[in-house]
Image 1 (cartoon, rainbow, N blue to C red):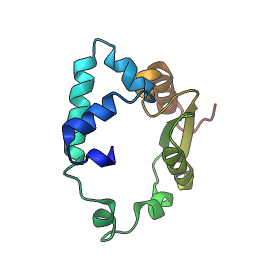
Image 2: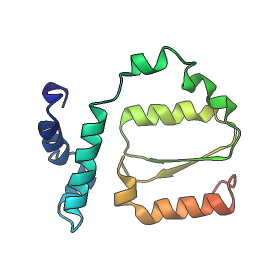
Image 3: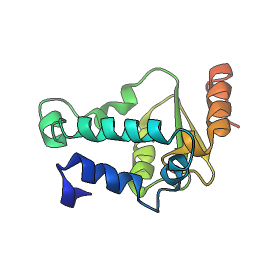
Length: 134
């Protein structure tokens, strides 16, 4: 992907045609194909306008260092087949005092597409009993 930046069309082509991303591949075969393409195109175009992390974080205290200050009850949903960097982020969020983790088996980053009922059940359960652990 990085080799074709900032060519948004090439970036989009790579994103939509990567065989490892079964959720996108499934969506590309669905009736929502055009909507999926539209969402990804908008995200690619927006991402090209973002400042780099170095530009964003140097002037502010690191958010990651302040996770322990979050007071609200928090739900963190993650798939068990998520990429390693997101799993590392989940570990960092263990600093949040009132957090409930829900791990969805066999789900990756597109778990809202591939496991919608599990996501809905997790959110409903959290809203009814935020800090109950199942």
